[in-house]
Length: 283
Image 1 (tube, helix red, strand yellow):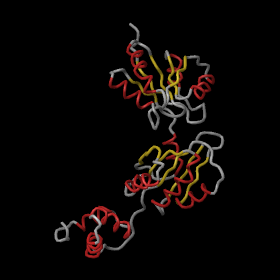
Image 2 (cartoon, helix red, strand yellow):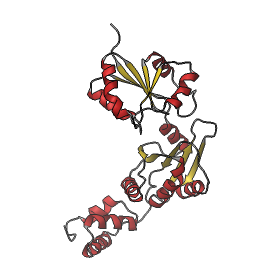
Image 3 (cartoon, one colour):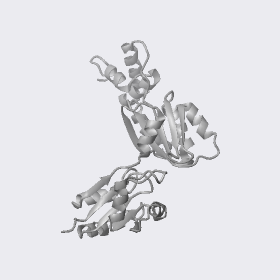
Image 4 (cartoon, one colour):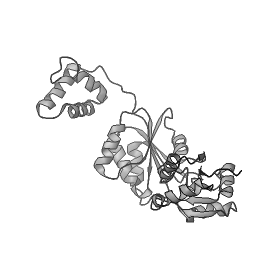
């Protein structure tokens, strides 16, 4: 009896074609079809290793339309290898939708690991690795981006984001504005000939990149966790008075807590606890 149809998710190199695993090469050779994000990019990898498996386009614009037919083919016994332009399909790319559809249809999914821009950049950055948060691509709209960053401001983890080279400077400037005083890194062209990692205070990294006429290659931005607070004891009465004053002016209590926390440079949760202690007005 032949093996059942299935989807094999194959991690491909993030730049250097030598960074592909033997298991992935075997899977690409043995599959009935390779579903690729961009067949022009994938042809280079397959040609490098003399693989002539049929290529089919499966990208942001086609994946939803193709998925029902791909599912039916795998249910009929076909083995399909899924690859993206670089890295692991399903991470900030449309391959996640095909994987989800397979799981719902009870089509077996096998994942073969490989090169990772996220992990390579994290280690190369020199920033803390005890915990990290991967946020994909930040919103392009100024307000949405600011809110997304403010929501992560107190997270004790290194923040990792993807960014396009033409928006790298704008995003770094936004990071410097919302998360000032932190250590940061910009990694680009990882594993390639012109690999570069710029490290330093976020303000300096932002100034370096925004001063360049052009930035080339795929970019990973990393921002270290907030530094340990060095301050004296908090005057609880003063904090409550500040919050109450804003509330009296018409600001809702949640917003007042947020504003005072930012003014005093202390965690929002601490201001919230003080402002909502028994005896605080408005509770």
